[in-house]
Image (cartoon, rainbow, N blue to C red; front, side, top):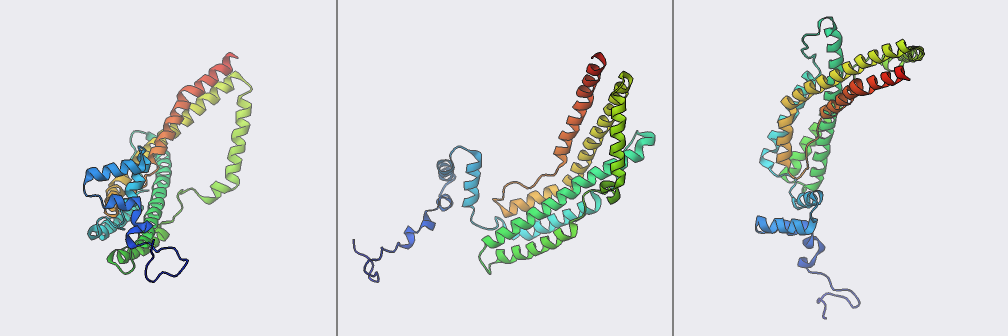
Length: 285
Protein backbone atom coordinates (compact mmCIF):
# COMPACT_ATOMS: atom_id res chain seq x y z
CA UNK A 1 0.00 0.00 0.00
CA UNK A 2 1.58 3.26 -1.06
CA UNK A 3 1.45 6.28 1.20
CA UNK A 4 1.03 9.91 0.34
CA UNK A 5 3.85 11.79 -1.42
CA UNK A 6 4.68 13.74 1.76
CA UNK A 7 4.62 10.67 4.02
CA UNK A 8 7.88 9.97 5.80
CA UNK A 9 9.30 6.45 6.03
CA UNK A 10 7.85 4.52 8.98
CA UNK A 11 4.81 6.80 9.42
CA UNK A 12 1.24 5.49 9.26
CA UNK A 13 -0.91 6.73 6.36
CA UNK A 14 -2.82 9.91 7.14
CA UNK A 15 -6.60 9.50 6.96
CA UNK A 16 -8.39 11.57 4.39
CA UNK A 17 -11.04 14.07 5.43
CA UNK A 18 -13.81 11.59 4.62
CA UNK A 19 -12.26 8.99 6.92
CA UNK A 20 -12.06 11.12 10.04
CA UNK A 21 -13.81 9.80 13.13
CA UNK A 22 -15.75 13.06 13.32
CA UNK A 23 -17.46 12.23 10.04
CA UNK A 24 -18.44 8.78 11.28
CA UNK A 25 -20.24 10.01 14.40
CA UNK A 26 -23.70 8.54 14.80
CA UNK A 27 -25.16 11.99 15.37
CA UNK A 28 -23.92 13.21 11.98
CA UNK A 29 -25.26 10.10 10.29
CA UNK A 30 -28.70 10.99 11.59
CA UNK A 31 -28.24 14.62 10.58
CA UNK A 32 -27.34 13.67 7.00
CA UNK A 33 -30.31 11.32 6.57
CA UNK A 34 -32.53 12.36 3.69
CA UNK A 35 -35.97 11.32 4.94
CA UNK A 36 -37.74 11.10 8.28
CA UNK A 37 -38.10 7.34 7.85
CA UNK A 38 -34.36 6.98 7.43
CA UNK A 39 -33.74 9.11 10.49
CA UNK A 40 -36.16 7.03 12.56
CA UNK A 41 -34.48 3.83 11.40
CA UNK A 42 -31.05 5.18 12.32
CA UNK A 43 -32.27 6.35 15.72
CA UNK A 44 -33.73 2.92 16.44
CA UNK A 45 -30.56 1.21 15.25
CA UNK A 46 -28.22 3.43 17.27
CA UNK A 47 -30.21 4.00 20.41
CA UNK A 48 -32.06 0.73 20.64
CA UNK A 49 -35.59 0.58 21.97
CA UNK A 50 -34.98 2.62 25.12
CA UNK A 51 -36.72 5.98 25.12
CA UNK A 52 -33.92 7.71 27.01
CA UNK A 53 -31.25 6.41 24.64
CA UNK A 54 -33.20 7.50 21.57
CA UNK A 55 -33.70 10.96 23.06
CA UNK A 56 -29.97 11.20 23.75
CA UNK A 57 -29.13 10.32 20.14
CA UNK A 58 -31.71 12.81 18.88
CA UNK A 59 -30.19 15.55 21.04
CA UNK A 60 -26.69 14.67 19.85
CA UNK A 61 -27.83 14.92 16.24
CA UNK A 62 -29.03 18.50 16.79
CA UNK A 63 -25.64 20.12 16.30
CA UNK A 64 -26.91 23.69 15.99
CA UNK A 65 -26.73 25.65 19.27
CA UNK A 66 -30.14 27.24 18.64
CA UNK A 67 -33.03 25.60 16.84
CA UNK A 68 -34.77 28.91 16.04
CA UNK A 69 -32.12 31.63 16.38
CA UNK A 70 -34.39 34.28 14.86
CA UNK A 71 -36.88 33.90 17.75
CA UNK A 72 -34.42 33.21 20.57
CA UNK A 73 -33.99 36.75 21.90
CA UNK A 74 -37.75 37.32 21.91
CA UNK A 75 -38.29 34.10 23.87
CA UNK A 76 -35.48 35.06 26.26
CA UNK A 77 -37.06 38.43 26.99
CA UNK A 78 -40.47 36.87 27.60
CA UNK A 79 -39.01 34.32 30.00
CA UNK A 80 -37.18 37.00 32.00
CA UNK A 81 -40.36 39.05 32.09
CA UNK A 82 -42.22 36.04 33.46
CA UNK A 83 -39.59 35.61 36.18
CA UNK A 84 -39.99 39.25 37.14
CA UNK A 85 -43.77 38.98 37.39
CA UNK A 86 -43.56 35.76 39.41
CA UNK A 87 -40.92 37.19 41.74
CA UNK A 88 -43.08 40.23 42.46
CA UNK A 89 -46.46 38.51 42.82
CA UNK A 90 -45.80 34.85 43.55
CA UNK A 91 -45.64 35.17 47.34
CA UNK A 92 -48.50 37.63 47.83
CA UNK A 93 -51.24 36.52 50.27
CA UNK A 94 -53.89 34.31 48.73
CA UNK A 95 -57.62 34.86 49.14
CA UNK A 96 -59.03 32.39 51.68
CA UNK A 97 -62.73 32.19 52.48
CA UNK A 98 -64.99 30.55 55.06
CA UNK A 99 -62.45 30.13 57.84
CA UNK A 100 -63.75 32.76 60.24
CA UNK A 101 -61.29 33.78 62.99
CA UNK A 102 -58.73 31.25 61.72
CA UNK A 103 -58.36 33.08 58.42
CA UNK A 104 -55.31 35.23 59.38
CA UNK A 105 -53.39 32.21 60.67
CA UNK A 106 -54.27 30.08 57.66
CA UNK A 107 -53.44 32.91 55.29
CA UNK A 108 -50.02 33.41 56.88
CA UNK A 109 -49.19 29.69 56.74
CA UNK A 110 -50.30 29.43 53.12
CA UNK A 111 -48.21 32.47 52.24
CA UNK A 112 -45.05 30.96 53.76
CA UNK A 113 -45.42 27.66 51.91
CA UNK A 114 -46.35 29.41 48.68
CA UNK A 115 -43.32 31.67 49.02
CA UNK A 116 -41.07 28.63 49.49
CA UNK A 117 -42.43 26.89 46.38
CA UNK A 118 -42.25 30.02 44.24
CA UNK A 119 -38.78 31.09 45.38
CA UNK A 120 -37.40 27.60 44.92
CA UNK A 121 -38.80 27.46 41.40
CA UNK A 122 -37.43 30.88 40.50
CA UNK A 123 -33.93 30.02 41.71
CA UNK A 124 -33.92 26.61 40.03
CA UNK A 125 -35.33 27.94 36.75
CA UNK A 126 -32.88 30.86 36.58
CA UNK A 127 -29.98 28.53 37.31
CA UNK A 128 -31.07 25.99 34.69
CA UNK A 129 -31.51 28.65 32.03
CA UNK A 130 -28.16 30.29 32.77
CA UNK A 131 -26.42 26.92 32.72
CA UNK A 132 -28.09 26.00 29.43
CA UNK A 133 -26.99 29.31 27.91
CA UNK A 134 -23.41 28.66 29.03
CA UNK A 135 -23.31 25.23 27.41
CA UNK A 136 -24.87 26.40 24.17
CA UNK A 137 -22.52 29.38 24.09
CA UNK A 138 -19.56 27.01 24.37
CA UNK A 139 -21.18 24.86 21.68
CA UNK A 140 -21.46 27.73 19.18
CA UNK A 141 -18.77 28.93 16.81
CA UNK A 142 -16.90 32.00 18.03
CA UNK A 143 -18.01 35.22 16.40
CA UNK A 144 -21.29 33.90 15.05
CA UNK A 145 -24.64 35.52 15.68
CA UNK A 146 -25.69 32.62 17.90
CA UNK A 147 -22.56 32.99 20.02
CA UNK A 148 -23.17 36.71 20.54
CA UNK A 149 -26.84 36.23 21.43
CA UNK A 150 -26.10 33.43 23.87
CA UNK A 151 -23.30 35.39 25.51
CA UNK A 152 -25.50 38.44 26.08
CA UNK A 153 -28.37 36.32 27.34
CA UNK A 154 -26.08 34.34 29.64
CA UNK A 155 -24.75 37.53 31.23
CA UNK A 156 -28.33 38.76 31.65
CA UNK A 157 -29.41 35.55 33.35
CA UNK A 158 -26.48 35.50 35.76
CA UNK A 159 -27.36 39.02 36.88
CA UNK A 160 -31.02 38.08 37.23
CA UNK A 161 -30.12 34.94 39.16
CA UNK A 162 -27.91 36.88 41.58
CA UNK A 163 -30.70 39.36 42.23
CA UNK A 164 -33.32 36.69 42.87
CA UNK A 165 -31.35 34.51 45.27
CA UNK A 166 -33.59 35.46 48.17
CA UNK A 167 -34.34 33.40 51.25
CA UNK A 168 -37.09 30.93 50.44
CA UNK A 169 -38.87 30.88 53.81
CA UNK A 170 -40.10 34.04 55.43
CA UNK A 171 -39.85 32.77 59.00
CA UNK A 172 -37.92 34.91 61.47
CA UNK A 173 -34.33 33.81 62.02
CA UNK A 174 -34.64 33.67 65.80
CA UNK A 175 -37.59 31.29 65.46
CA UNK A 176 -35.71 28.90 63.18
CA UNK A 177 -32.49 28.59 65.12
CA UNK A 178 -32.97 30.11 68.54
CA UNK A 179 -34.25 29.27 71.97
CA UNK A 180 -37.91 29.69 71.00
CA UNK A 181 -37.95 26.62 68.76
CA UNK A 182 -36.06 24.56 71.34
CA UNK A 183 -38.55 25.50 74.05
CA UNK A 184 -41.52 24.60 71.85
CA UNK A 185 -40.11 21.17 70.98
CA UNK A 186 -39.24 20.46 74.61
CA UNK A 187 -42.74 21.40 75.74
CA UNK A 188 -44.35 19.17 73.12
CA UNK A 189 -42.21 16.23 74.18
CA UNK A 190 -43.18 16.67 77.83
CA UNK A 191 -46.88 16.93 76.97
CA UNK A 192 -46.70 13.79 74.80
CA UNK A 193 -45.07 11.76 77.59
CA UNK A 194 -47.71 12.87 80.07
CA UNK A 195 -50.55 12.11 77.65
CA UNK A 196 -49.36 8.57 76.94
CA UNK A 197 -49.66 7.61 80.62
CA UNK A 198 -53.49 7.57 80.57
CA UNK A 199 -56.18 6.41 78.17
CA UNK A 200 -57.84 9.81 78.14
CA UNK A 201 -54.49 11.42 77.39
CA UNK A 202 -53.93 9.11 74.44
CA UNK A 203 -57.35 10.00 73.02
CA UNK A 204 -56.77 13.73 73.47
CA UNK A 205 -53.31 13.47 71.91
CA UNK A 206 -54.73 11.51 68.98
CA UNK A 207 -57.43 14.11 68.38
CA UNK A 208 -54.86 16.91 68.50
CA UNK A 209 -52.56 15.11 66.06
CA UNK A 210 -55.53 14.40 63.79
CA UNK A 211 -56.44 18.09 63.67
CA UNK A 212 -52.83 19.24 63.24
CA UNK A 213 -52.00 16.81 60.44
CA UNK A 214 -55.30 17.50 58.70
CA UNK A 215 -54.65 21.23 58.90
CA UNK A 216 -51.10 20.86 57.59
CA UNK A 217 -52.42 18.72 54.76
CA UNK A 218 -54.90 21.43 53.79
CA UNK A 219 -52.20 24.12 53.99
CA UNK A 220 -49.82 22.11 51.80
CA UNK A 221 -52.48 21.30 49.21
CA UNK A 222 -53.91 24.81 49.07
CA UNK A 223 -50.43 26.38 48.89
CA UNK A 224 -49.40 24.01 46.12
CA UNK A 225 -52.47 24.93 44.08
CA UNK A 226 -51.86 28.67 44.57
CA UNK A 227 -48.18 28.39 43.66
CA UNK A 228 -48.91 26.21 40.66
CA UNK A 229 -51.53 28.62 39.35
CA UNK A 230 -49.20 31.61 39.67
CA UNK A 231 -46.24 29.79 38.14
CA UNK A 232 -48.40 28.66 35.23
CA UNK A 233 -49.66 32.20 34.64
CA UNK A 234 -46.19 33.76 34.60
CA UNK A 235 -43.39 31.39 33.56
CA UNK A 236 -44.91 28.17 32.23
CA UNK A 237 -45.54 29.16 28.62
CA UNK A 238 -42.52 31.51 28.27
CA UNK A 239 -40.24 28.73 29.52
CA UNK A 240 -41.70 26.22 27.07
CA UNK A 241 -41.31 28.75 24.25
CA UNK A 242 -37.67 29.32 25.22
CA UNK A 243 -36.96 25.58 25.28
CA UNK A 244 -38.58 25.30 21.86
CA UNK A 245 -36.37 27.99 20.34
CA UNK A 246 -33.22 26.48 21.87
CA UNK A 247 -34.12 22.93 20.87
CA UNK A 248 -32.82 19.51 21.97
CA UNK A 249 -32.63 20.60 25.62
CA UNK A 250 -34.87 18.06 27.29
CA UNK A 251 -37.80 19.26 29.37
CA UNK A 252 -38.01 22.52 31.32
CA UNK A 253 -37.68 22.26 35.12
CA UNK A 254 -40.87 21.62 37.06
CA UNK A 255 -41.88 23.39 40.22
CA UNK A 256 -42.38 21.77 43.63
CA UNK A 257 -46.16 22.11 43.69
CA UNK A 258 -46.67 18.48 42.69
CA UNK A 259 -44.40 17.31 45.50
CA UNK A 260 -46.29 19.38 48.04
CA UNK A 261 -49.56 17.94 46.77
CA UNK A 262 -48.10 14.47 47.40
CA UNK A 263 -47.03 15.53 50.90
CA UNK A 264 -50.57 16.74 51.54
CA UNK A 265 -52.01 13.38 50.53
CA UNK A 266 -49.58 11.56 52.83
CA UNK A 267 -50.50 13.79 55.76
CA UNK A 268 -54.17 13.27 55.01
CA UNK A 269 -53.74 9.50 55.02
CA UNK A 270 -51.88 9.70 58.32
CA UNK A 271 -54.60 11.81 59.91
CA UNK A 272 -57.47 9.65 58.66
CA UNK A 273 -56.09 6.14 59.07
CA UNK A 274 -52.86 5.79 61.00
CA UNK A 275 -53.57 8.03 63.99
CA UNK A 276 -57.09 6.64 64.70
CA UNK A 277 -55.63 3.14 64.42
CA UNK A 278 -52.86 3.95 66.90
CA UNK A 279 -55.36 5.46 69.34
CA UNK A 280 -57.64 2.42 69.04
CA UNK A 281 -54.75 0.03 69.68
CA UNK A 282 -53.61 2.07 72.68
CA UNK A 283 -57.12 2.12 74.19
CA UNK A 284 -57.84 -1.59 73.65
CA UNK A 285 -54.41 -2.76 74.78
